[in-house]
Amino acid sequence: MRVLWYDSGMSTEFVRIVCPACYETFEVAAPSPGEVPAEVDYDCEICCRPMVIAFWQEEGEILAEARSLDD
Image (cartoon, rainbow, N blue to C red; front, side, top):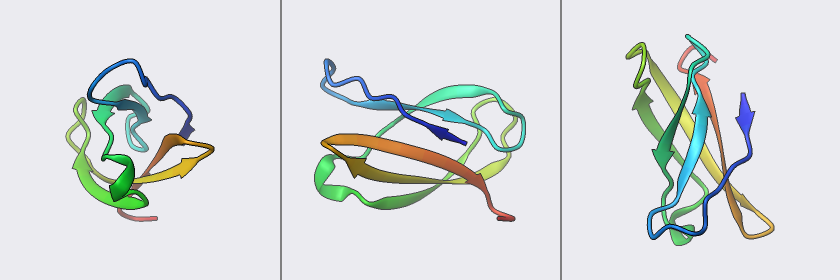
């Protein structure tokens, strides 16, 4: 699921992620703009299932999408 959210008012930016397994929403720290695009292996903070989070930029915003490892 694609979630468009970026908090530029903080020194560490966070993006909201929706787990593709349990559909719970939580926040993860975004990589710095110089490190995007990027893909990161991550375990859901709610159900602990593994996923891949893809980060990219559009119009200066860091966006993210989580997908299960089976996709």
